[in-house]
Each structure stands twice: as structure tokens, then as C-alpha cells.
Image (cartoon, rainbow, N blue to C red; front, side, top):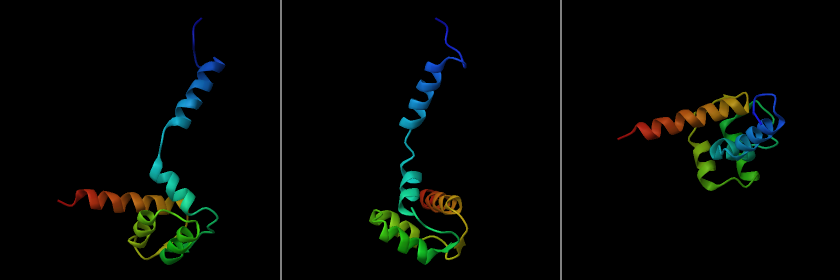
Length: 91
């Protein structure tokens, strides 16, 4: 039996693979800010994360983000990624 894009088992297999992929930091950021109503300033991001019982390292990471207004979860994730990239660049 040939498999192809129209084969329903391929779709299910692909869905399983995608679901099994882990994006732990993105997932943690999303869970930490669950229920947040954007836009939010950095101090409110930290507060929401604490209220959602986010891991202390994530709360600390939010605390180190630039002090500005974040308009969306995507903006927060982008800032987190940039922050981590700066840290990994340091010798």
C-alpha cells in the first residue's frame, strides 16, 4: 500500500509527531501567562507568572526582560528568545 499526502494514516502520524515535538520554553511561557490580557508591562508579566505558579527560573527570566509594554504573547516569546540569545553569546 502506497502512502501519500491523501492517506489518513500519514496525517495521523504527522499529527502525532508534531504533538510529540517539545517546545518546552514556549509552552512554559504560554502556561505562565495563561489568562493574561495584553497589552501588559513587564511587572505585570512577572505578577501573572507568579500567580500561575510558573517556575522560579521563568519568573526570573521575565524580570530580566526590557521594561516595556508587551502587546502579545508572541512579543513576550520574542523578547525571551532574544534575552536567551544574548546570554548564550556572552563568553
